[in-house]
Image (cartoon, rainbow, N blue to C red; front, side):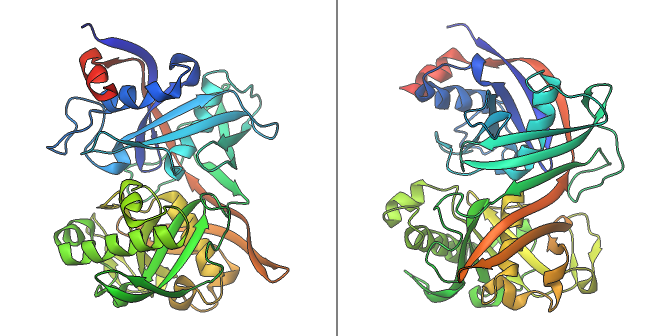
Length: 388
């Protein structure tokens, strides 16, 4: 069978990369998408490298985005995110990717989907995974999204033009509620682990947070060391599964194991001195708290942006695990999150309405760049195999 070609772009958004398709170039029947995405990315790969596709062997490089006309009057485009698992023949649509969200507005402008003129563009993005609106603001350079700039982000070499992402009313992205169980923190009975104090928060993406000390960790562990600590990884996986059921994301533990994208699980600790992946120093005085996240069973080398937003929202909620370890008095300014790649600054606005916590918005800056475009070659045999 001959290879199939589909028009596509390959883009970096923040600390992630993805194949970006126009919805018009994919089959109208979305049941056919999974096989195409798996073949294009190179999954499943038991070797974990995805050498026969466009993936890079880790979750942040195993992604697909689809952009099309808006299905809501308050949006300019629809954007669907697909997380392609590395070792399994499975595509997960249950969550959004904040990093790749930063590339969607520029893609829409450069492709002529959204008209723009002057020096700045604003694209209203409807993320179909979470049914939430994201405002993307970025500079224009001769009618196209600017690329050159002075913004440096942790985990990406060099600098680029800033893209400001504003997540509007991010609460309840997966469950319909900012606090799915109604509590800022509670003891969660985790099979095989025991009771663990957690905060289950759903803002931009559903997450469960635990104090690092409560799971036998320091909080500054780097991804490779954490991945080698199988006991800690198993505890975190068990917490994620129990939280998935408690949050109403999955009906039982087996379903929670299959739904691996959400909730994300992470651990937090107070500000402390640490080393980054690049060997640079992060001083406790320069951050408001320390965080690590697990993404699809892998320690993230930075922080997923949606999780960063969720962390910032949780830090604003009195009584949460994150609020308890954050620097006192940090609630009135953008929060500085220490992570494996450096420090990320995130703004979040949270209020109380009729006795309930409400997330108004969260915002941060990313850079993005189109790496190439043309045709992606997809093995027809591989598509047929995974479709079958």
